Image (cartoon, rainbow, N blue to C red; front, top):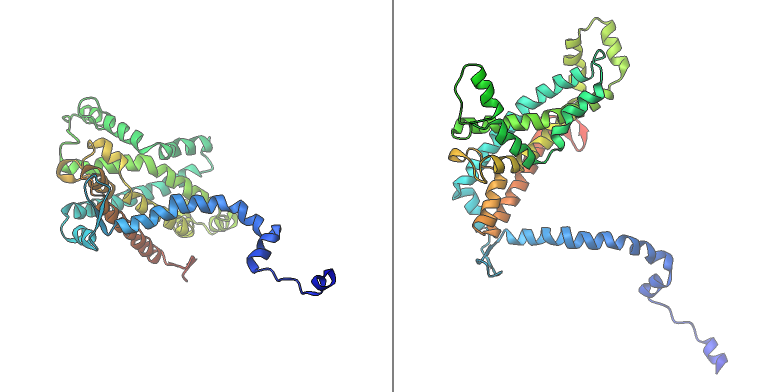
Length: 315
């Protein structure tokens, strides 16, 4: 009987059986499994759930949902005036931020890289610190700075012979307040990125320009500025995306509202109001997806404006 058993061909194992028999094949998957499990639970599932929620309506506090199709998106496009207000405010804030911060950041970067400047590291740190402060902190500082009774802005106005201004009570002061706070918070951050870009410019190029008789301004205008185009592209794209997420400072300045005539009303403020003020989770999720697509469009437009394509600069 033993001879007969030995003569029979051995049973072939299935591919799965061979896989688990060889420890060297399944051990690597064991080590990467925690990442994929965590990713699936905390990233993939919430993302897929959010896609579905954008087409649903929450039924009060019952935890039940009703399928409404594209009704949330149609409402956001056609029947929600605050969406238009948020879009206009976002456009003003983004253009105002880029128009004031980028030129000043470039000039500051030139100043902080000047050979005659002492303690460059200290100055760079001081200008960079506001960018790491929480948005709530910046909002509280803004409340003090623009306070009608004891703020620094009114103290300066009174010192110049003017009268105290109610900065939060008039529509035409809302956006200047936000742009001032954003300027103080992010201008130094942009300057640090530009300084990093300047460090990559070859000294031979600058020295050749000096030999040719180029003035400091000519070197900055015709050599340094064009070579920093990738850095400017990165700054403007991230700044525009950050403007879409503008929430903390307006929330603190305007008591969770949008200020007079909603001049401080932004997308994140609207999402918070819809989700937790009116408990319209489905509609708030739809707005979030619209903001996501706006960010994609803005990024693509800026890539084309800076003449970048597929990660490479166009000739």
